[in-house]
Length: 324
Image 1 (cartoon, rainbow, N blue to C red):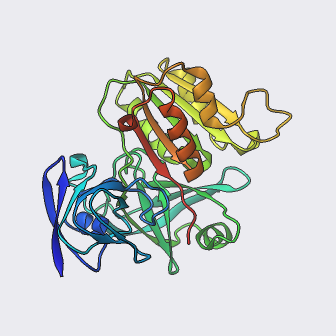
Image 2 (image 1 turned 90 degrees about the vertical axis):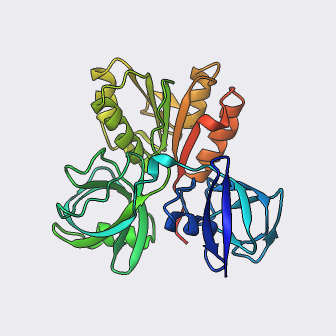
Image 3 (image 1 turned 180 degrees about the vertical axis):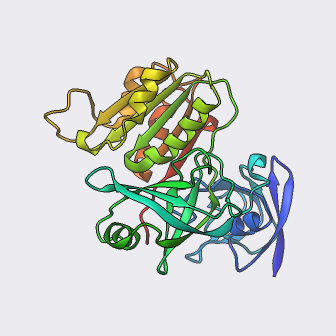
């Protein structure tokens, strides 16, 4: 059975079946509601239920006035939701295309830069900041795209996760010309049009979408002030010199690396990466902030940045969640 689902304040509607999530129904209809992990972990798809009833993946029933995760909840009745809708993504269609490995380069002790090439007629058409699902040998994992356009294929930054199925395959047996598949574009993490200064907050390989977005801004000769805060456990884990190069070549780009671990040789900033932002600015009222990393980092930074007058409407995030 299907039900009509209305989205406010954009005043759009679509049909959703009782056996599919609200988010999946919206995406099938070409309506891009805010989301990231699609697994109920990151909380980015949280929406206000204005009318109707839904059931989540655990069988819990929610009704009018409740906050729900659209990736986990299915409609039991007609619904009205207060949710973010992105017309910028209206022309996108998710597709699965074949790709081959151009190169797989170990850039640090546990991070590999994977460059993939797709057929000339099979581009996925992503926006900088979005991600793809990588399919190989029956395993699927999500990775942010690290390049700003598809002229040179698709670049991914892959961390070697202990006992990780996909990372074990990539680090253990991948070779040049290995055939894989990518599915995308995915996610609602992309640059919003604005004149506000930008703070990029990256933890670990959360640098991948930041790289994509900063490259896009630089290529477009953006004059907004850009601050890049990149956090790592140890200074040897920083696997790219690009942020430093950008800051030296562009006067509006500023780079602040931060180490959270006990690194006696590190002479730079120490502590949690979002605390460095808190220390550097008395108020975040007039900033746009893009954060990418673990859910713990995302949640902590969002909460603390609100205390610095940041409006929730100007905090954009993409949480890297562990596979289940």
